[in-house]
Image 1 (tube, rainbow, N blue to C red):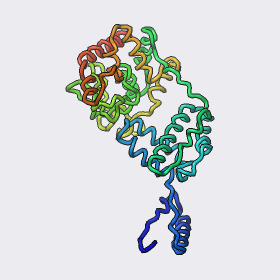
Image 2 (image 1 turned 90 degrees about the vertical axis):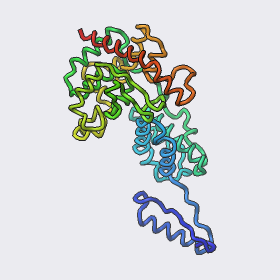
Image 3 (image 1 turned 60 degrees about the vertical axis):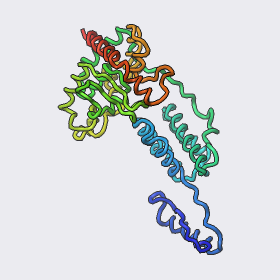
Image 4 (image 1 turned 180 degrees about the vertical axis):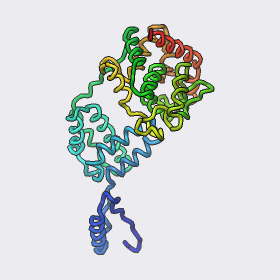
Length: 348
């Protein structure tokens, strides 16, 4: 009681604060209350603020793939060293030690991504009155530059034929082989292929409907036309994985089908087929299709919409975006059929 009023003070969250530490804090607070002083202000921890930021700005707002990546990086890299520290007590060197460890292990891009996440948390802390400054601003130039390299991809008919023949001869598991063909025919984003769910497939309409939470164009739904080749893949897989959630589940979760295949599954298959990372990657199916479809005379309004890219300045709101991406659907379906037939022609 302070001046006749009851006050509550949060001592910390178990198990991040032990019972012994909680009792010590309780006794300290009792001591200052007896002297008539107000209990000391409790500074929220980095974990508390980061969790609130994630729930407010990422979870359910950004794509499912992005949200999973962000929470994973928080839990793996930032929480172990910073989680229990008060936001106001964290210094630039505290963050730099984490980033340097990542950089020294060879994942420079991840180090930069983690720095961005930390910066967003610090700026959110300032906005809600729990932080004083973004200490990552002091780390400008402290890391090696993140040099972006283009994804390895087949860019010529000869190179595309090598990829097609490699998939055709692939002797690995049927789920991974199906994912390879599905990637080649649809040239969808690797993350969307891995996380594709049976509930997203409309066999009657021959469409793969990727919901808003999982697509980057942020429309209510992103439609991928399915041609006979992709329908055939799905029908064959239905007997193998149709009992679960994911079309391409992880072999470790095959019985339930409740976990998607590994991020490295398609890439590892390409390496087994003999393609180096400079020659072909999981993301390379998109670059391959874009390059060769443009060479065949298809226009940006069709190709880029099928790629899931925003086109021009007509996309002003979600209603307009949904319209723009559903229009030209017949033209996109025609292009996808011609593309699939062309890939099949490379097998001979």
